[in-house]
Image 1 (cartoon, rainbow, N blue to C red):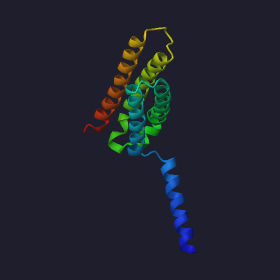
Image 2 (image 1 turned 135 degrees about the vertical axis):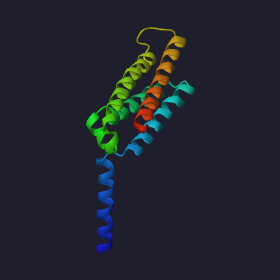
Image 3 (image 1 turned 120 degrees about the vertical axis):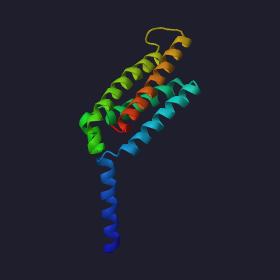
Image 4 (image 1 turned 90 degrees about the vertical axis):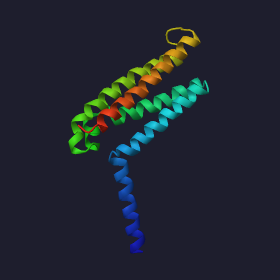
Length: 141
């Protein structure tokens, strides 16, 4: 009985820790999966899928990257000063997410071709923001 109780406490502690603490690797994997869903929706011309997946991605990206103090806690001591890059990436992502949402909703009454091109370009800017941040944060200096 004590062993079961001990295992339950350990499992609960681990689940609480993984929920409450920000784990950079698992969060990046989540963002990657969200972004992959956006890409697949683009490829299949699924407007609703694009809208849902880009909104989910934006929410997760802002939660992870948009708060300098929270992001700073995930970085090693010698890289904490690079947390500003994450915040900048969150801003770039938010701007480009809005471009994609405007295109999906045809906010500016544009042709389908122009909306697709603008939203796909915005998607590549989101990817670039991710890569830029990764390169800066992973840099040795």
